[in-house]
Image (cartoon, rainbow, N blue to C red):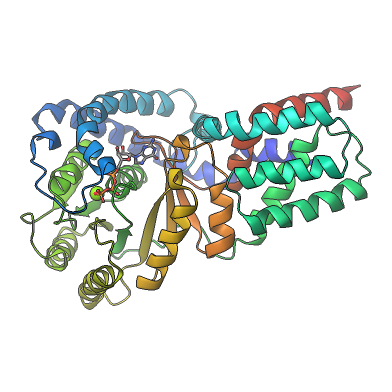
Length: 424
Ligand SMILES: Nc1nc2c(ncn2[C@@H]2O[C@H](COP(=O)(O)OP(=O)(O)OP(=O)(O)O)[C@@H](O)[C@H]2O)c(=O)[nH]1
Ligand SMILES: [Mg+2]
């Protein structure tokens, strides 16, 4: 079977783990009701905008925007809620374990990668149209395009070697259809590097602690809200810990997400010790018999020594209460910062034991190739990607869906051609 047919089957088909969810449909339905109720209470949620920004030294413009963006986000919740209801009801046979249809997740990747597709893929398409036959000049130009999309030097070199080999092996002369060969090789490269699972390390019957780290403005708090929503949809009880006691408004921002998703937020006054918040939160989570505790942290500790000290202290308090915790340390990286994200990752990797990466704002960059560079350079699995600002815009990273998102239209066309010629 051709690569495209296999891919189509995988993306559209009902996989075994997707069937499981049908049994929990009722639960998902109830939880959607919960979300609706939460939305109705939204007007009582304190607006983060009203909290003063007192901080001076490292307030970036980007983080100020976070506060300004709040009112717009609140309106988006209503849309999100409607969308969830729509997804849950009509397409039951395609339900995945997340409660969305298999097809709609693929479409989310496609929509989230639109900017990358518009820039990178359209250039590949132009190249294909200009060259027609595969030769060394074509390969060189393709190599440049891949480097511009932030795919990363090593990955590009590996891909080019594989492409040259495949073109020779299959005696491919025509550039038309090369997108499918590139896609196949990208999947191969990504999966061969995939030493660790992207599954969250969720403890069975015990409290799981997930710690979020990352510099300011990358999307930690937003991702925590989205992840809480996702876990709640899976039937887990979730508690949030407001460990960013440093930035003005950070606690309220997490509380807004807590109210929106319908989960409790454990917090203390601004300026208090984050380790003390973690201690309280673990106690509360244990008392309530919660399944997952997700901890927010401050993103302002640019200084490596401060960062190490603070993370070490938070870590110590958490593992004193639960020996194997935190079970996940997720590093949020902003895809729009390109190569800078790789530098940040390196710093955090030295400061703490990062177990996974959440690559946020993939929808906001034309250089979505960064996913591949991160995987290849850091050897830390990208566990989730942020494909938008809404509650259900956080998706587990999926190589096929990602690659499909990169080349969607070209692959659709090629598949249609393949299917047509196999019918004849
Ligand atoms: N388009 C898009 N925007 C996102 C995504 N994730 C987060 N954002 C936006 O990024 C901005 C910053 O997000 P926050 O969650 O406040 O970031 P943070 O890392 O908690 O920031 P600090 O608390 O300042 O350290 C917000 O406006 C979010 O809505 C995403 O996947 N896509
Ligand atoms: Mg935050």
